[in-house]
Image 1: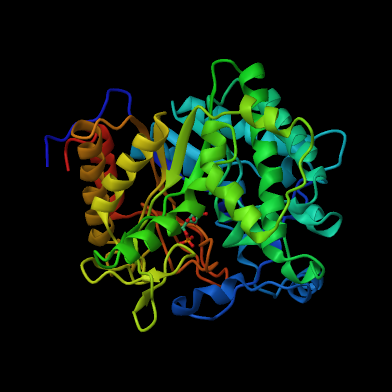
Image 2: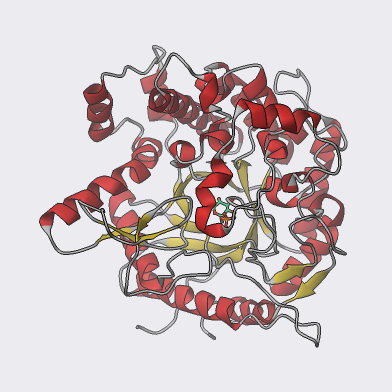
Amino acid sequence: MSELKFPEGFLWGGATAANQIEGAWNEDGKGMTIQDCLPFREVGHDDFTKQFEFTSKDLEEALVAGPEANYPKRRGIDHYHRYKEDIALFAELGMKVYRLSISWSRIYTHPEDAEPNQAGIDFYLDLFKELKKHNIEPLVTISHYDPPLALTQEYQGWYSRECVDLFVKYAKTCFEYFGDYVKYWVTFNEVDAMERHPVTSGGLIEDRFTDIPFDLVIYQAMHHQMIASAKAVKLCHEMLPDAKIGCMMTKLAFYAYTCKPEDNLATQQRMRPIYRYVDIQVFGEYPKYLLNELSKKGYTIQMEADDEAVLKEGKVDFVSFSYYMTSTMAADIEGLEMAPGNTVNGVKNPYIPSSEWGWQIDPIGLRISLVELHDRYRIPLFIVENGLGARDTVTEDGKIHDSYRIDYLKEHVKAMSDAINEDGVELFGYTWWGCIDLISESTREMTKRYGFIYVDADNYGNGTYNRTRKDSFYYYQQVIASNGTDL
Ligand code: BG6
């Protein structure tokens, strides 16, 4: 390891998403999102794929559910009413940047509305003013896994081309109203994720597509998101010339399970679906391997005449990504032990430890990922998610001694420093995922906590919702204050 060193002005911070923290799902003109319809299920974390099962019947149930039903995203951590207290804690932590997402349904009650919802605009304006007061730079994700429910109910989710214009109208409204406050933007969270969770990425319910292969639905929906993203990027460049707008990917990483060439080939092939949409967003065109994949399947994507030009004009300024873990891949996985992960299964790696949720902890994998991304894209990188989901215990002294989270953070910070100083990676920021405890995306539980700030709430919504600083809070404070040199 080389000497710890980070560039001056490095953006240390934390990240959240509207649907996982805000709550207030039906207040002040907010429309419903697909997230408001996802129930809590007692399935255990080994069987996480059960959480993704969502049918038209589940949706019907959600629409008539009474207040006793458990839809955790409806309550979040009540950030909507406590954002000032939360931002004050972020400021005390020393955060230089806060990554948050805007809820489309708060800005447009119905995506077709001609005018935005003033109460929604005011909420975010107040929030941005509060951040400014504390010298915290916002980084805004325009769409983080919460498509308005109307896209599913009145259209066919992102499979419908109409979503492009509706999204661009929403993005334009964000640039217009918040452009004075926000310099860093990201279009879609984890843009590669549509095939892993089509409901939250695309508002797509599989049983509604009976006469078309569902993987074709996903390719088409992704094409629409690519066009929507490129148009938003172009608009942002025109409307806010000083702003920077990026894409966001799930930086999954796989090692070959053995040094057999077949396993290495399988690993390389496994990585391609992760890169293909970011390739479009960075290079402005479909990569040849994706076009080959489509033609091998005999699929044709419906495109409009100027789509190719739109993609070329909407190239992003930076690549941001989430990184939690690595996994391994083999040509023949039969009989090998699998490890659950960030909505993805891979073969378990015997050389690295796992979190209680089976996510394999691998700081060296972060350095490898940074080098890969730098060498592939050659534009600045930003880690917008990294963190450890763990079960925390409040001890008798009322404190949370989360040394495991501190260890995770320490090792990942070292890996970033090495990537910057030894490998020449251009990395300009790091936002820890879930700087305050929030509702888990994949399992919708509170038990799996990421925060430096503890929130007293359980999986059923019980608790005071009071905020408490964990041991890791003071540790991250020291990391930020020393610009990553005092670990
Ligand atoms: C990322 C998402 O995939 O992982 C976040 O962008 C999510 O929304 C995070 O919360 C951690 O996943 P989980 O399932 O532990 O909440």
